[in-house]
Each structure stands twice: as C-alpha cells, then as structure tokens.
Length: 314
Image 1 (cartoon, rainbow, N blue to C red):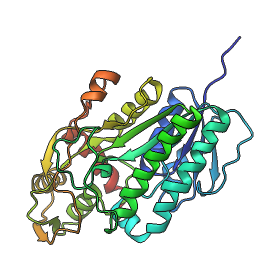
Image 2 (cartoon, rainbow, N blue to C red; image 1 turned 90 degrees about the vertical axis):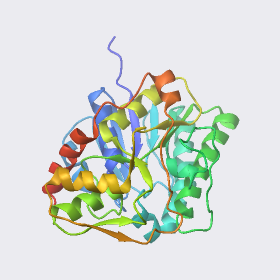
Image 3 (tube, one colour; image 1 turned 90 degrees about the horizontal axis):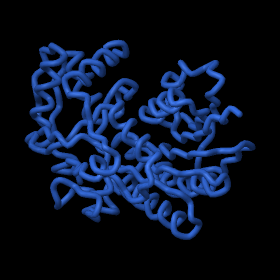
Image 4 (spheres, rainbow, N blue to C red; image 1 turned 180 degrees about the horizontal axis):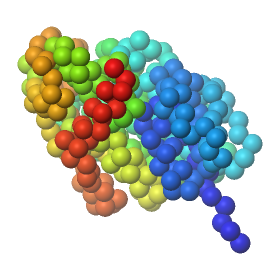
C-alpha cells in the first residue's frame, strides 16, 4: 500500500524563510499548509506555488485559534516579524506572535500529535559576553530596550516550547537562527544585507553604524533551511544554533557588497543603534556532530544570487 505523504504546517509561510522552507518540504514530498497574515510576508514569495495541489494557503493571524480538519505530522513555527524595522514598528504584534502565536502553534501540534519546530534566533543571546555563542550560553539581553520585544518574545517562545515538551510530551525542536540572507528578503526590511545591497545598487552612500567593527556571520538561505530540515528529522530536542561561523566586520562586509555590485558608492558612518550586538558568531559544533551539517555556499556565490534578485526589485 502506498504510504501517505507527510503533512507539514508552516506558520509565516509567506515570509523570507517560511517560503523557502515550504519549497524544500514540497521537494521532499510533503503536503504543505501555509499560514500567514501578510504583516511582513508577501504573496510574491509564494505566488509560484499557486495551483500546486500539495500546497494549501490559509490567511490567518496565528495568535488566533488554528483549526485544521485533517491530520498533521509536522508544525514549523516561523511566524514573526524578524527585522529591526519590523519589530520596532510592530512591538506588540511581535510579542503576541512569540507568546500567543507559539501557544496556538504548540496547541495544534499537541492536538495532532505532530512534531513541532520553533524558529528561534541568535537574538536570544542579546549583546553577548561569550564569543562565539554556544547553545548553553544564557545571553545578555535588555528586556526593556527597543529590541526587547523581539528578544523576549523568542525567549518566552523557547520556554513555552520546553514546557509543552516536558508537561505534554510534545516532540519539540528549537533552532536558533543566525544572520541569513538570500532571494526574497525585502529591500526595506532594515537588515544589513538588503540595506547595503539596495544602497550599493543605487550608488548611494552605504551606511555603516559605529566604526564598523561589530561582526556578523552570514549564512545563505539554502544552507540554513537544509540544517533546519535535518534538525526536525533528528531525535535532538535541545536548542541548536544553525548559521555560518565565518565572521566579518560590518566595514569588511560593506566593502564586499560594493565590490560585488560594481557600485560607485562610498561608505558613511552613523551612530550605533541602542543594544546593537557587537559580536555575533555561532558555535555550530552541535550541528556538525549531531546533524552532520555545515554551510556549503561561499559568501561570494550567495551574494551573486542575492544581488541578482535585488536588481529585479529596484
């Protein structure tokens, strides 16, 4: 007898990462039910899935009760504003989707006896005092600062996920996502990759905050999504960092973007935003050992694809 394909629910399916995850799941033979309210996601990211019999879309705020009249095997909770511009403009929605939205998504997983994965974040670590960041580091977070709505929403979401794991025996996974880039990012989402690329493509000054000494580590979206898929399919139930451990200063990155775009832009410096992390680099030892995963796409190749995408949007 032919085995039924697994059914995956993806919250935030019209977002940058949620849409790429939906593509990967469909390629792996899953039926996908995407949920999004388009607060920060966009129809453009999933329009290519229109007419696909294995993809169903529900426009809904996941902070409301999620009713599905069919079996579900996996719940992937990706719904949340995820860029500084978004969560500074939408602090209450960010807190609600991290708390109520996570509660509703976990309730769905419990009801359907499905495995649940929380898309958490390196923001869990705040402005870290430990470098690189390992999963057992508890973080250095300002709960009442402007970034607190996002950091604390995700920290609460992790606590709620582990409470459902311990009390209700829900099979849970937690991925801490570090800086990721690629096609389908929004031009104006305030994160460094779209900001630098859009400025460079328009030959406008590329804005670096502080002296540009703060560091980030950039992972291409296909590597990240593959790591997350492996985590869900593994037996590992503790938080796991997924990201690229190659570290760059913002000044080095700005120069790389100008070179890759062939831009005439100059670099300008502006004051550092409040609570902006000075260093951000994942320790990916767990992912290497447990998932046999590490990033493969070099920065120059990932940037070539990302810049090509942004050229179509400017």
